[in-house]
Image 1 (cartoon, rainbow, N blue to C red):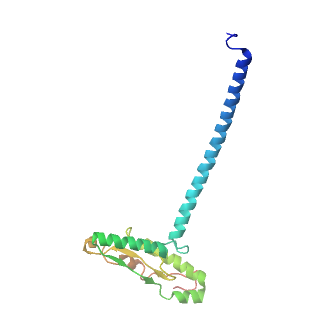
Image 2 (cartoon, helix red, strand yellow; image 1 turned 60 degrees about the horizontal axis):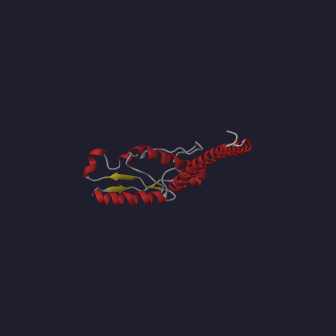
Image 3 (cartoon, rainbow, N blue to C red; image 1 turned 60 degrees about the vertical axis):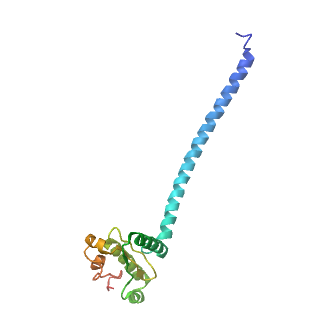
Length: 178
């Protein structure tokens, strides 16, 4: 009915509706782009946080737990030991003749020995054990529970050491072993 709905007013209403729908569409597209950017940035932040946490807990050279993380794990193990009544063992390892390797072959060779040693230790430990770098040359594998209840789980208190005792570490120059 043209008397009730004047064409000029209806055209104006239609124009407003078209402009509003166009604006909503543009805003929706922009919001979708912003959500995609936010998702990418959130993923990047999560990846960066994981990397920071890894670096805060691991020795950069050997890729095993650093002193801070080792201290945290040992404190947790001590609490667990007190609550469960089980005993645990802590082993500090000093690599024989390590200073000689560094002095004769340089720090790059010493670094290679440390990396190789850390990999060998990690490969020799049980899933309940952990290793970390306490100081410049020391490693501290934790052998987990060692009381009577643990005897059936493994044959020797320091079973991991058998694989390392006679292990020769080839210095990268290839002319000597440490």
